[in-house]
Length: 483
Ligand code: SAH
Ligand code: SF4
Ligand code: F3S
Image (cartoon, rainbow, N blue to C red; front, side, top):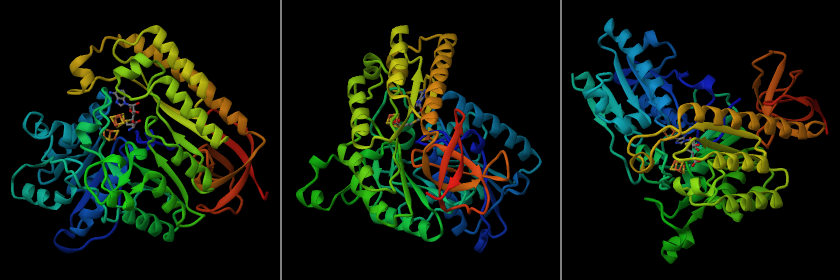
């Protein structure tokens, strides 16, 4: 199942290579191989990178053996994510021994975090490019061609790649990601993202609407608006994030909020589904909830990561809300959108978390009964506030046991939520052929539940009504009906 949220993409897509077939100019015989790890933002960025390199004459390949340039778009969110990349880089270095002219580059969050260390100390790569420096890639590769190692990890206050049309690769041709903000100003104490992605900035709404329109015209039927904290989207002419109250009168008059942006995208066509991720509980406004309710094509699904159910831990994490506030947001969502499904991220074993506090997280899960959940053991990240100020003092075995309890409860909840849908009819956007059988198709309900049903003559990219007849923890099973 595809994961939602600004989070890691489905395991099966981690490291997937992407291809396009277009070649012009001086690099026309050169091939680039790009692998992406981490969250949807990284997958979206790889499509921007492919676009920039295609304009410079490259074509892409899924075959490592054909590649002249290998790029790894990396993630630093947990230590394990970085270890995966290191292993991959040493594989590439083995290949390079027999093919010394091949260039190996690291993009994304690990590039930003480790900077030239990847070249100087670890000697793993030729090229290190941070998330705001992709326009410089052609020059940087050129430097490597001239025998130098190349690094650009400058973070920008403005870069949103607004006018670069991403090249869609490896997708299903039906659903696409559209970035609306970059960076994050929240400084949750456990999180590396503010260091690797820089300050928060919003992208010009015109370029967002244009991109979504073009996708619709090409046959896409769903866009997911992406940002680390989409609810704080605010366009006032460009530059770093500002609060609405700090804008001049003129800026306020011309500004576009997240609710307004969603509305603009929803109005492109009723057949274009709109999703968004990630919402931050402290910033999710009633305006946003009302806008979701107002448009049938804005999906009734909110990814609202709680992280912990304990007020003391939430405070240590600097999340900016209490468990009471979070529950009130949930109540408000259900008051305005009764069938809205909710998903979450949870970190277990954060610094000094007690057994009672762990129980409070389980209590929160019992309250919301999340449809989907992404659950992690706390992993200390260098230079974060938590690393500098708190002790990572929960033993691994306890983290593991708490995680298992959280996962077990989540499975019960997810099964409960899926069971609630049995006997009901949902509109499903068909995304592809089921992995288990070529006689079955799959798609998602507005609530983001995956439904599988007999193929018959139905077409990918169209909407159908599915009567849900049974379910597992992860999937709804049904048949197409005309109602
Ligand atoms: N911007 C999003 C999520 C970003 S990262 C948000 O605020 O919700 C995705 C998830 O990874 C986070 O929600 C968190 O649950 C998890 N995560 C982040 N840092 C982590 C760390 N140091 N250890 C374990 N999990 C972490
Ligand atoms: Fe990290 Fe918090 Fe920003 Fe999410 S909101 S990216 S968890 S700092
Ligand atoms: Fe995403 Fe990982 Fe960076 S989750 S923002 S790729 S640290």
